Image (cartoon, rainbow, N blue to C red):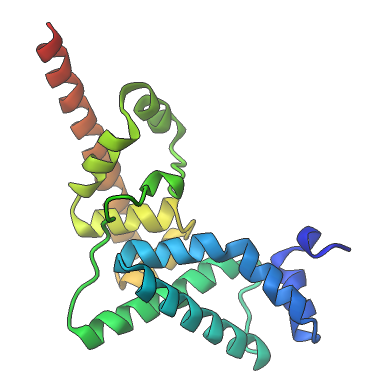
Length: 197
């Protein structure tokens, strides 16, 4: 069976059994999502690469020690490890990570909104540039949940553990983030209509 056809769990089992190429396939499969979730938090490509490598060293050590037990949840597990490394880095630096993005990095290459009706509305009424500007205006904790949920594909349980809040709080932040985006879009539409009249 080709490596590309195997599930994450089959690749993990294969790697533990001594097939190094299985790990390469796992990294190749998830590299862009893990790297980008780090980059969105640290906003520095060199630092993001360092943390990415540290995260996969932890992954390798955990797999080799036989301590991996996240069946079917490989990507959220790796992103959780990476996120904890980001937090450790900022603790050492005594700074708090802000989830924003530098010019030239398009958040829409990586965020996939699950809320289809909202996505349809956004595509109809806004350009990506406008929406990117609106997302930057969200409070940091709302921006963070939005990115983890829609880009990192983390469950609200994972998000609550990473951000150290209850699941209800994480859900609430997500709801506020989407509501705030909708309000900003409606306000923008009204001002555009008035401007064009």
